[in-house]
Length: 182
Image (cartoon, rainbow, N blue to C red; front, side, top):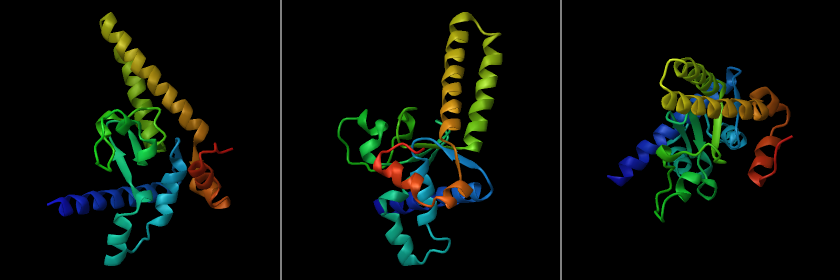
């Protein structure tokens, strides 16, 4: 049974990486602290996998890419940087805890689609806050402000696939080394 779960986990991650590659090839941008690692994952996953590739790449730690609908983000999971795992005591699970995703985590990357959803949510919260009782309105406005910070930080780190092709490994290399991209 654990092998079946690992296989399903890998199939889902591979599909997420392929979808990300499709989005980036279509001109979407990618941003966030883990954008370079996300881009690198799309480069490492071949379009056609042999059964041997499938087994080998399923164990590759650089291909641990998870879609997190609750956080409206991608998690490019690296255990050493994961704030969701630091909140727990011990544990040997090598997957992120997507329910405890933290905005300031270095494993987060977002696409233009994610930012559009966050912006829509932000606008909706601000509109609904005008009609809500004060405590609820304050909570809604705080969430809208949080979303505004996410959108602003995305804009500062946004890259396009065409930009990354001009400088093939600069973004990914600097991000993997812990240096900020210019």
